[in-house]
Amino acid sequence: MTPVETLTLRQGQAWRARLAERASGQRRRSCATIEGTVSDLSDTFAPAVSRLYRGAEPWMPCDGVSLVLEVTSSKPKADRETKRHACARGDIPFYLLVDRQESSITLFSDPGRDDYRQHCTVAFGKPLTLPAPFSFDLDTTDFL
Image 1 (tube, rainbow, N blue to C red):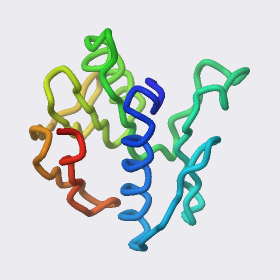
Image 2 (image 1 turned 90 degrees about the horizontal axis):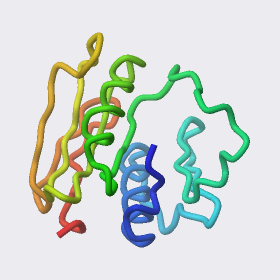
Image 3 (image 1 turned 60 degrees about the vertical axis):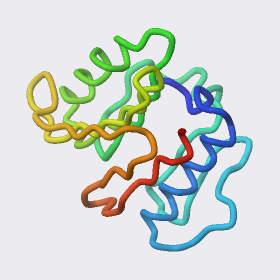
Image 4 (image 1 turned 45 degrees about the vertical axis):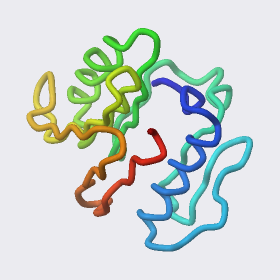
């Protein structure tokens, strides 16, 4: 997966804080550290730097993963298609794609055999509704 650093550090911290805040229903002053983000939810962790996983196995189980967030890189086809298909095959319920080249964000849901059956795309600046277990409107105005 593309590391969070593909956004500016400030944008990445804002996203992690907003997701953790909304998921827990509590306001946070700060939830980002140089090593990563750990919320009061025992199953939430968002790495701030990719070196945390050096030496880890290249493939890890998908069990328990609710959402994968991907930000398009200089090779957006891999982010838009290859990784999305892999997540669907892994039965990960949601794949959230921040497409920097298209200035949009897409939530893919309902994983099938090789792809997601549903998707919803909004332009940067518009809210994107995330369903349960997240259940909030994601504000994307920071990406304008």
